[in-house]
Length: 399
Ligand SMILES: Cc1cc2nc3c(=O)[nH]c(=O)nc-3n(C[C@H](O)[C@H](O)[C@H](O)COP(=O)(O)OP(=O)(O)OC[C@H]3O[C@@H](n4cnc5c(N)ncnc54)[C@H](O)[C@@H]3O)c2cc1C
View 1 (cartoon, rainbow, N blue to C red):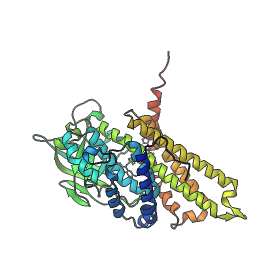
View 2 (cartoon, rainbow, N blue to C red; view 1 turned 120 degrees about the horizontal axis):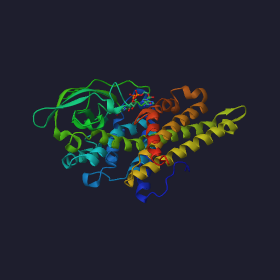
View 3 (cartoon, rainbow, N blue to C red; view 1 turned 45 degrees about the vertical axis):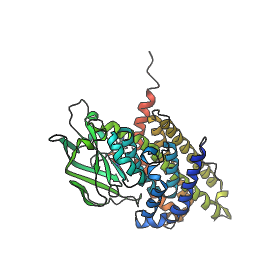
View 4 (tube, rainbow, N blue to C red; view 1 turned 90 degrees about the vertical axis):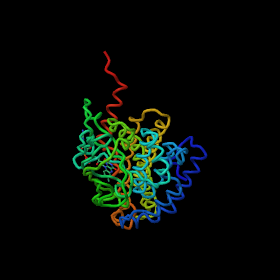
């Protein structure tokens, strides 16, 4: 039992649930991850098992058929799943963000309609802000919804980088709505778009052209989304009112950041485990490489980063669970966990020597997966902007 990544103050229920998830990861995910990744195959069996375990409804309240768990429990489960195979945590991440946004900002009707089916995984969510022309600068989106007769709206534009774009049947899409308010942020709206799974025309005026080929993060599909005169109604606006989309999406991204931090913690932990195991069996110059101090120091450095990232992530999750703002803490957790993960993965790769470059070794796969965490839910530069602006509020100019 490792002393790394432990969490104080968990209830017996949380400990039991995490034990179950760990067992599931060790028995059902780790043994098949390599094969599925090399084939870029969607892990359908794992997804079906996660549905049965209630993982798609982890944070959805019991009244809507979910498990009603906290963000912390969710993040700890995600950490464990990412230790097994990080893209599996990507399959639940956008679903979780969309469910959270509906719970927090949806109308009563939207909650009753979507949440029970999201809890079972029958409805699965994708989350779409990015476009070909922008990712960080969200206020610059071009996709536009124009009002028509009565409560009708028509959406046209192109979205990019939808994680679960083809496997989801619900997409929360951020669009521009010219409401005449000052500032771009108040002229944006989130629409909930129902579609079928798969590629091609998945709903009237909603096309998913194909899968984007990626260096890593395989198994989970990432797609574009073309909206060509998609007709919808005010009833499909998240919260029923236009103009609130930017703030709703930023709230979603804030919990998403804790989630990405948790994924980075899990991936770093796996890289650490692999590095330690390899260092204890490989010999050079007449001794195990772990007995060379340079390698021992690497292990110490990796362990420190694995531990620090976990504690930052736990702090950010607990603040949100207490109902407090966690923009600063989620930004710090996401930034540091993703950077530490990339560093720990790189160090484990080096410990593996030439074998780390072979596709037979897990570290080769993990090495290609870690960079995704530097990008998703905001790059390092974007996190630093959030952290910097937020922390300066505590240091007002005196005199
Ligand atoms: C595999 C994958 C899955 C994704 N899934 C989703 C998804 O499900 N939904 C979704 O909406 N998006 C998704 N994204 C998109 C992702 O959120 C964006 O790629 C990310 O926000 C960065 O945007 P960009 O790629 O346009 O880079 P840009 O914004 O063009 O940035 C390019 C570089 O400039 C830097 N930069 C930008 N602005 C500044 C600044 N003001 N100061 C200093 N440096 C700056 C950035 O940090 C970066 O290094 C996904 C991306 C990937 C790769």
